[in-house]
Image (cartoon, rainbow, N blue to C red; front, side):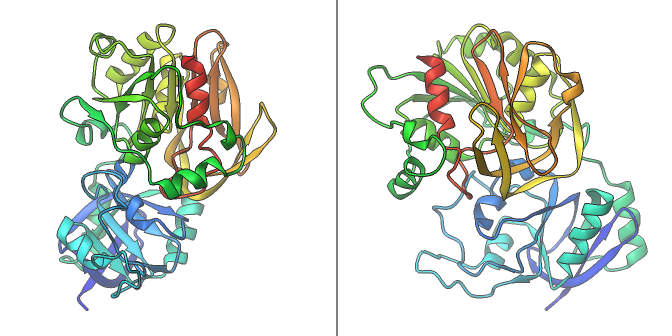
Amino acid sequence: MAKAALALEDGTVYYGDHFGATGTVSGEVCFNTSLVGYQEILTDPSYRGQILAMTAPEIGNYGVNPNDVESGRLQLSGFVVRHASRIASNFTATGTIGDYLADAGVVGIQGIDTRSLVRRLRMRGVMTGVLSSEVLESEKLIQKAQNALSLAGRDLVREVVPSGISQWNEKIDPIDLVAGVTGGGEAQEQNYAGREKQNHVVALDYGMKWNIARHLASAGYRVTVMPGTSTIAEVLAQKPDGVFLSNGPGDPEPLAYAIKTVASLVGKVPVYGICLGHQLLALACGAKTFKLKFGHRGANQPVMDLDTGKIEITSQNHGFAVDESSLPPELVVTHRNLNDDTIEGLRHRFAAAASVQYHPEAASGPHDATHLFARFGKMMA
């Protein structure tokens, strides 16, 4: 195999074997602890601008297929694994992960010590890096990494938002539906049929995973997807019964246009946000956010619902969090991360507005939190 190299801004260089597309890319180097779901991860728009390392040692063993995508393209800058499988041992597979990356123009590296890389990122924090199958000289790579743009302070949402308004009709797979309805927590509350009124939900897409829209449609809502750059007038012109704020990439604080729209929505219509949408709701109410040392990325994050005392294992992908010391009086903490005590959920005291930092739609991940779609429905009742 051709060689490839990954250089970090602190001067560390890892050499391995190249797979996927050829080229040289830069991005924030981070890691994900999920054991499965690599195709959903690869197509998650929240990874825009990042070079992602997987902690699981074998990636690609069940191949790829067109049904496991969460957006219209691969979104990340580069992919780092211990070993990329050359075969696809699943009857649903239509290709291998190496060909998948190559066709999408994503550079990959395998054969490096991913444990060493992840330990470094955990101790020192995520860093800007350069991944290349073309340039192998360590000095040049380190210099490129040190000169590359940081993810903080950049507006990456504009790179992933849809170009226009659309209606979403696709629902989640019946197998996933059963798993979600019969899962833990309050999943039994979820009723996907027989509603007296079909609520109209506007989903503001800041880089939305498609399974979010599938869950909203499966919950019986009429779903209109709008770009996250939409103005308050454009949103209200759709006459929504509720507005859903999606996930998305990068730093939330530069998104002044989105913060302004969300601030105007609160109190006018029920609002529910997840991931980036959670952060935007907090910012719209006057709170601040901060950058986590190495983020929460994986399908095994324990979160306590402070209202019920129940613990959910959640799927997460974010590098920023809401600063608790900056919370205004009208925001109440509803969920907390049990690993680092950061805020995982908020509720407005006076308006119909709430949010969680994690992904209730999973894709991939546990179904413990699917009942939150039903909570959103109760807000619109």
